[in-house]
Length: 131
Length: 344
Ligand code: HEM
Image (cartoon, rainbow over all chains, first blue to last red; front, side, top):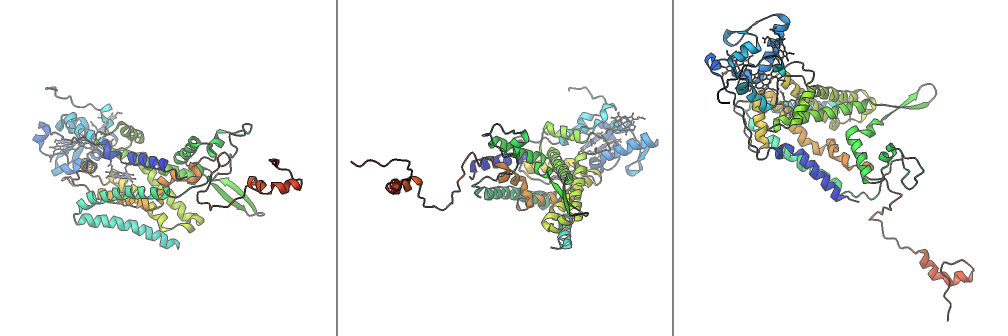
């Protein structure tokens, strides 16, 4: 009449499912991303915009660049401190951030995004040393 | 309660919550809004849910509540019994579980929602099926589920494969950067529909209370702040994930990078939702599994269910009656089951 056994079993199943994030991660130390600035970027000292702005908004910049180039034929972007940039994923971003693996992928694997850009755009050749 | 009171008290309640989060951030209470309140909310959620289910579990359910259709049971094999009948009137626990599952997954009862219409020419009643509420409810619940599952990418490391698959399906339009995810917008549209329905359908509006508007405004607030955060007021998602992972690892730490204000508004509204959940009508998440009209087999004819608190009734069975009056019955020529024993 009370079906206590079934209710407790159901309650336990519900609790196990809902606490998934707490037990799934048990014993797994999270590897925090460490995007490495390539020497080319270090030499340039600054990115297109401020570092904080880039961390949150870089996909929006890429989107704007893409639209500006492909739809409006603009090529020049005025960035931080009036510096001019050629609006190009391969030829600008990746000129400074020469390693996709050491830079972009570091963060992207952490937050689980896999931009599909590289289906068409070429990623820079990774340096071979020791890997 | 008047419509205005119910509607505006809920609306300003949610706006007030947004204000509280903003004031808290202004006072640099990141630790309170990023760590303490989330933990309190999660604890309230689980303790509240368990308490609620235990209260329900203590309610005795002595009888079955058979629904009218599909009553014919297995004892009459010549009565045709379709699959729908077997689900509608389950004969054992497995069929009853299936009935609950159709309720949970497809909102089967809501699908049979009817609308009554009184025609003007001559008082005639007509019923026709009304699926809009069902459609809105399905869209709302499933998009909510998908959004929630996709959020697991903030709470797991490594992120399980199904979350990424869901992300890809949800973003298959490949529009914009960050990619537009359909479920977030569908959630906002569906919950807005549910709100509008409450306002414009006179009967529903009449019975609506703050407790009906508040969860709707709260979820609208959550979806809106989430969408604004993803597509417009960007935040540093790496910092967000550092915080959320530290929370589930039970080593809470506010990342020093700093996260935009809108994240804390989103998170605070979510915390209020979680904390409010077990104490409001939203507990139907657990309650649906405990609906006696749905989760018990309709075996009232096959099995005798006895109410345990029936008062003890003194009965005089026929056997006892005959035992007492057998001689007189035989004398009067009445038939008896056991003949009189011959006296020696
Ligand atoms: C009731 C639960 C929640 C609901 C319904 C919800 C809803 C949403 C929605 C609709 C979006 C828009 C983007 C999308 O579709 O993914 C979003 C984004 C977001 N939510 Fe939530 N949310 C919930 C809980 C949380 C929690 C607990 C956190 C973190 C502690 C969180 C953090 C975020 C973040 C960081 C984004 C931005 C994602 C991005 O920029 O890619 N949400 N949320």
